[in-house]
Amino acid sequence: MDHENRYLRAKERVAEIRKFYNSLLSYTVFISLLAGLNYYIDQWNHPWFLWAAFGWGIGLAFQAARAFNLNPFFGRSWEERKIKEFMQEDERKARWE
Image (cartoon, rainbow, N blue to C red; front, side, top):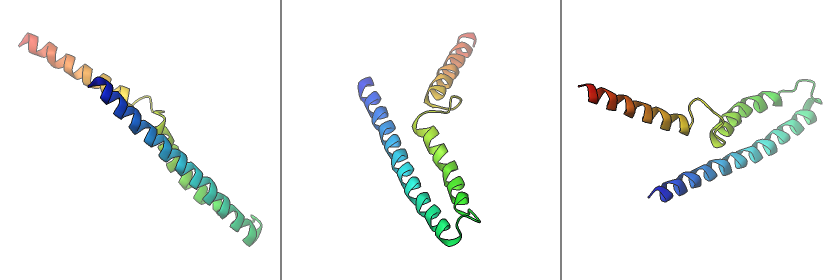
C-alpha cells in the first residue's frame, strides 16, 4: 500500500511539473507575440507588453513553486511534520488523563 501511495504522489508531481512546463511554453510564445506586436505598433516607446509579462509571470512563479516544492514552510513535508506533532501531543495528553 505504501508503494502505491508513493507512486500516486510521484505521478501527481510529474503532472504538476508537466503543467508548469506547458504554461511556461505558452507564456514564452504569447509574451513574444505581444512584444512583437508592441514593437510593430510603436517601436517600444510605450512597452505595454511588460504589464502582461509581469502579471502572468507572477502566476507562473507561484505555479513553479508548487510544482517544484519550493515553499519550505508549507510544503507536503511540513504538513506531515505537523500531523505527527499533533498526534504526539494528543498521545501525551491522553497519558496524563
